[in-house]
Image (cartoon, rainbow, N blue to C red; front, side):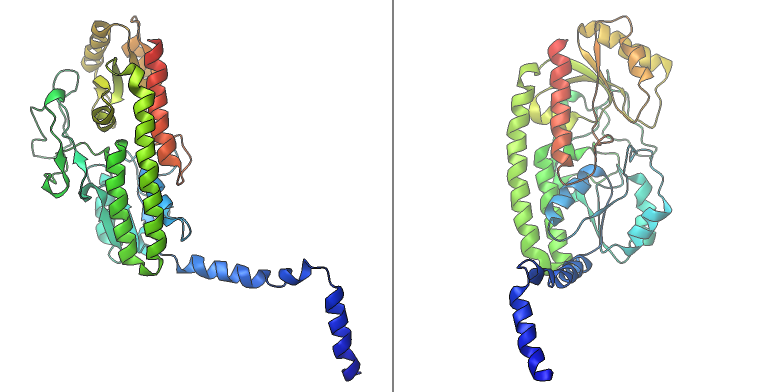
Length: 342
């Protein structure tokens, strides 16, 4: 029987369908994939635009975790227990900085002790713009004792770069990602941080970073074409989050309903903006999905202005590596659509 068994098995193997032999290897392949995922560092990101850039650079290695998900805003976010656990387990943490995600400052000190923490508002090569004040931009008060860039008007705003910038929390506008060139600078810092924390995957990170850099250049060119027909047409925004976009593409934000979205503007402020809209003539006033749209309706009542929606923090978008590109195109398209019909 033993001698007959060997040849019988050989004949059986020859008669087996071709697809059954590779199927035997599937568990081994799945195991290998699981091992690769297990080897990926635990990476945590603060907001969707940063998560998108990190996701693009980590493709093929792992998926970063996101703290401010869904329609939440970093301006009003409260840390969840699941977020605290993620920070405690993280090997790398990416955030913009305390000027934007103030809710993270103390938790990072307490829970992120074992992680490499990259504060992306320190990325070399960033263009930083001071908060705007006066006129249609109300005085900025972030609750600190210092005076934050007082006296700067829109047309006097001066860009400062990287380490040369004053790192005072209120010294500059923190919506840095709304200029693709700033996104490129942050992507460089993200890549450097990931390579240092996970050198085994350095080539993957660097290759992905190069592809991302090329896509950001193409996006920049695309947005210039989208907004070109409406450059110079003034409009009002809910809060002053767009000056990097404005600075990059030469569009004209004439004022904001509020500088700080967590602070509801008073009746006098709303009346001031209402008068400004009337003085400008036909224009647009843009709401944001996270905040009360009723204020925008009050501002445009009795004027020829139209209303639109801008989403600078991607509240309505699904997180992922393509989110940044969808976000930026969405802002450009919304501006063009509203201003073209105004």
